[in-house]
Amino acid sequence: MTAGVAAPAPQAPSGAPVQPPANPASRRSMSNKAISNLLLTVFGVLFLLPMVWLVLASLDANATWSVEIPHLTGANFAAALSGSDLQSLINSIILSGVSTAIATVCGALAAYALSRRRIPWKGPLLLIVLFLTGVPLAILIIPIFELFSDLGWLSILPCALFLAVTTLPFEIYLIKNFIDAVPQDLEEAARMERAGTMQILLKVIGPLAMPGIAAAAIFGFVTAWGSFLIPLVLITSPNQQPGSIAIFGFIGAAHVQYGNIAAFSLIYAVPIFLLYAISSRLFRGGFVLSGAVRG
Picture 1: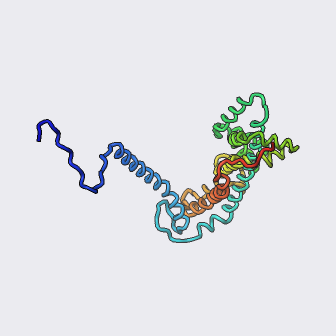
Picture 2: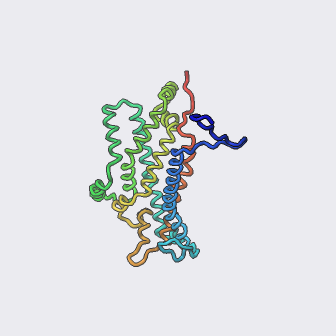
Picture 3: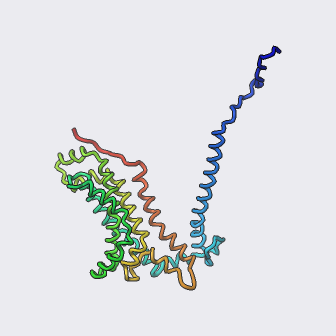
């Protein structure tokens, strides 16, 4: 071999696949992905354990705070669906239903006016509406209690009205964004056909903005369904207390009814699951405009 001439590189055997050189960046990416998956698994298990406890404890005759094999019984569900506990579930449906209906109807009307009408100081007004979504209810509950007490309104329906007012700013802002996306040509075409404002709202704007209206209604219902402080302060009659307060009735000074708490909690969560399941088809296709504009 001549001095100064590099030796030729060894050739791979014929037919053998050529392996690319190891890439440090790819190895780093794989290790980061493994760590991320491990953390997600840990968080998933931590989230799943309370749900597993709810299911097992609801079927356990001797339920405790720990996760264990249950002594199967249906007495916990029977107790949760009888007497004052059943009435509290009915009260929750009334409270959330009335609050959602008031907030959604008023929110849709206000959102349409803010979207389509020329209102003085509309920009600052929208900023005020957006600001009101972040006002904590704790600073309002004492003066509201004094006002409702003077008016004799410490019952379930006035409480539903107040819950509707608390969710109204966010619902207005949410519905307005969907109404803004509806082309005004559709509304003008309807007016050319001599349609009134309510007809336009019900037959043109309403169907096209339905995903936003449904999302606002779900938000209002879930907020009212899980509300605890407001019904506790504004509803004085034990017969009108909702389920969010009735759950604490299972916690006594000397004994905690873990099985009844678990069974009632599962039943209390059913309407929310059903609501999302029924309304999911409204969001499956996203926001889709249908119809045509007459030329």
